[in-house]
Structure formats: C-alpha cells, structure tokens
Length: 442
Image 1: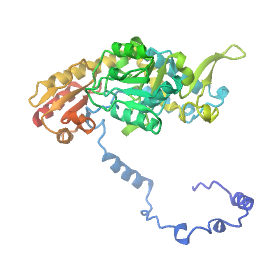
Image 2 (image 1 turned 60 degrees about the horizontal axis):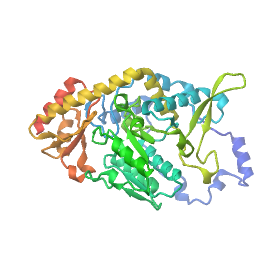
Image 3 (image 1 turned 45 degrees about the vertical axis):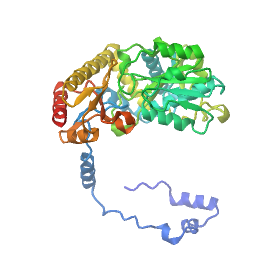
C-alpha cells in the first residue's frame, strides 16, 4: 500500500493559504526540463530480488567476522555481550530522542545519569557529561573549556605528538580562525612539557599514546600545574580497567572514545566521546549534565541539571554548539559496563595486554621485523618492517587477515612501521597465523 501523507482536501487548503490554485502553478517558475527529470532507475524488482542484490553488495565488504583483525588506531574490535543489543532495541530507548520533559523521560534520564556515573568511576574525575560525537570532538571541546576557563587570556594549546593524528586535526578545525597558537607539529622528538608557559591554556596527552606506549605522566602533570595550565588526558577506556586513572597524576580533563565499551566497529560509526572533568570546571563543560533529585512526594527522580548549548539558552552564552547527547550510544556503554562490571573490565584489559605482548614477542623474533616500542605498552605496539606496510597488508588480505595501520601515512619518520592492535577477540591460533604470514612476507 502506498503511503500518502496528505489528502486532496488538505492539499487544496494549503494551496489556498499561499494563494496558488494548483501544484502545477506552484512549480511554474521551475524550468520544464527539470520538473520531471529522467532518473534512469532500474526496472522494478521484487523484495526478494532487492534483498539478494543488497546481500551481494554486503558480501563485497571484508569485515571482522570474516577475517582476523589486527587493525586499531582508534577503533577496536572488542566483544559486545548480546544483552547490550537487546537493551538498545527496546522501543522506549530506541525511539527516544531528547528528554525535554523529564516527567515522561525518566528512563532516558536515568541511563544518562548512570552513564555519567560510570565514566567518573572509570576516570577518577568528579563530573562527566552526557557525551559527544566521538573522541576527537571531546578533545576539541576540552580545548574550548580551557580557553573559557582562562577567560580568553591564555592563547596557547600544547598537543603531544602521541595524540591520535585525526584528533589533532579535528581540534585545529574547531579552533581555526581564532588568535591561538596550537603547538605540536607531530614530531616524535617534541617534548610537550618544554612548550608550557604562562600563556598555556591546556596541554593534552594520550594515555596510552597513539603508539600504545604507557607513559608516566606525573612530571607533565606537575609542569602543567606549575604554570596554571589545564592537563587534558585522552584515555583508552579499556586500558583504564587496568592502569592508574588519570586523576591520580593531576588530570583536569579526561576525554576519549567510548567505542570499545560495547559499540561495534560498524564501518566507522556512530561512536561516542566521553568527557569528564573536575567539578570546578562544570560551568564551562559542553554537552548535557543529568542530576538525581527528589520529587514532591520524596521519590527519586532525574532531571537535566545543565544544558550549556544554544538550543536551551541564549546563543551568546552557550559554551558549545553540540546538538545531541549520543543517547543510544551512551546506553550501549552503560549496558556494557554494567554487564562486565569492574572485574570483567579488568579481565578484558588483562587479556588485551597479555595477548598483545605475546604477539609482539613473536613478531620481534622474525627476520625483517623489529619491535619499535621501548616503553611499556598496552594492547597496541609498533613494528619496524623491512618492506612497505601497504604491500604487507595486501598480502595479509589474501589470507583473510586485516593487518595493522601504516604509520608512514601520518608520521613521515615512521615509514615502513606498522601499528598493530590485539584485543581479547584475537585467539592464539589467529595470532600464530598472523605471525606466520608476516614471516613469509619478511
């Protein structure tokens, strides 16, 4: 049955309201040759035929259920418990958008409140918002928070070369056109602490860094505090199940990509950026903040406490133009963390750590390959290869193996270096096959 949204009487009423007699008269100003263009559509097909064609198109993609995956670089293949998807597909969550009316949005508001609480537990910070589009956006919003905190009197942002290159690009895009100095050109020899001074608004570093290194950030935290600059840490949330939380070395803001927490790779999105900070900076924090309260009958309830964006307050006083809270993705993260719990998250992190080190040790023993990391690393590491990484990855695909990230694309000094990611989903047999094929290509 064809769905027709308006009746003939309704169309007549609308045309009369604008003073037009017919639809043809409404479009009279359009050239005749563009009113009914030839769309060159294929012949009509049945539902079964369309589904078959779509299935063939889908099978042209190589995905992680078909192949072993050792590619990370910001998006990771982790196990998602089936309960996460079951909760996401509940109609009251799946169709919900914005909780403008708290009295009829208690479920959505409670999920956001629980999400915020879990992120603060994970990062060790005091307050978290209801999320951003992705990790890169969260970093950019952290920079804006720091500028607002210093009331525009400080005009330097310091970025570590160990931050994801795309995150640094997004931050520069966000802040383009402003009279700012964004220091950090991506040189691996660059020490971010050496650039901190009285004009520094924020210094940002990744933990573990883009190359998987677990760095001691105590000294950088002290340097930032000495000059009154804010320290922002871009954190891997799975690693926080095992490593010291950023709050313990003086982080003022902790951001990152929440995709590893119950969100599948999905060919690049949608993802979710988490954002946590100290309570003293909450007024400059973008996004939404949901709070717990008590109603007139003494019953627990949830409300939006802060919504610092232009949709709810005067544009001139808005701290951000963020236009969604990624509520469905926040629900996925909440369901995942609630399902695995503290012990489960630690177990996932330990599996990633030990499997990555098993893989790194095996590759380091091969002719033509050398482990580049000299600092402790988590579940990603860099291998120096004797051939171009693109050639090696092409050969790996012939064995249904998705290889690592070619670092030469963004770090010229790391040509023929491969960034390899290992998660709990990489079984020993897959790892051994990966090492064997690398040996053949060495």
